[in-house]
Length: 201
Image 1 (tube, rainbow, N blue to C red):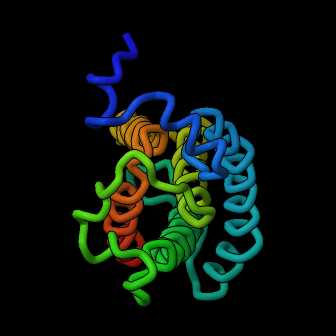
Image 2 (tube, rainbow, N blue to C red):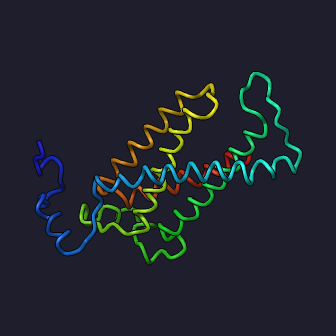
Image 3 (tube, one colour):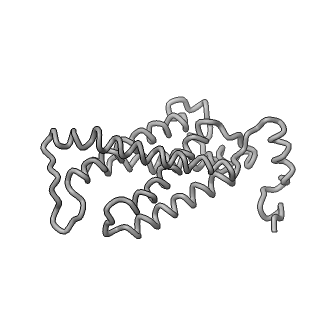
């Protein structure tokens, strides 16, 4: 089942990974994903605190009321506070993603500007701390969205968003465990660059 010719690039064996780890080169491990669950809980609690302690008072201050839109179970103030949370998260993770991918310092990570380098010497890519945390935070965020969907007011697009979050978590988990983290980090920042603008409108 774990045939090296099928799963690994040419001239690579499973023992190569053991040798790399013995040399102190950190590679993504499946068990790393356990960190996602406490982070997801932390993000959810952070969201609640931000919504109730900051976004809702600001919303009331600018005149947004706790009234429900026609045919909606979510109030205007609830939508405003949720959009504030998502805007802040997406903006922060986008800025962090830019730092991770070194867009301002392209010589630091050559694969940022030349995507062929994403595959250079694959799968022997060292997992850096910044990419590790980028993946963990993104995964935790999408897990927190799944959890919060069952607690929040159920919306019309509940199942569509649920499937979207499952697909995102699956893709992130797969790209992490097979060490596609270079190209994965680039894809993440490209997706994040549009998300915070969606919350403004």
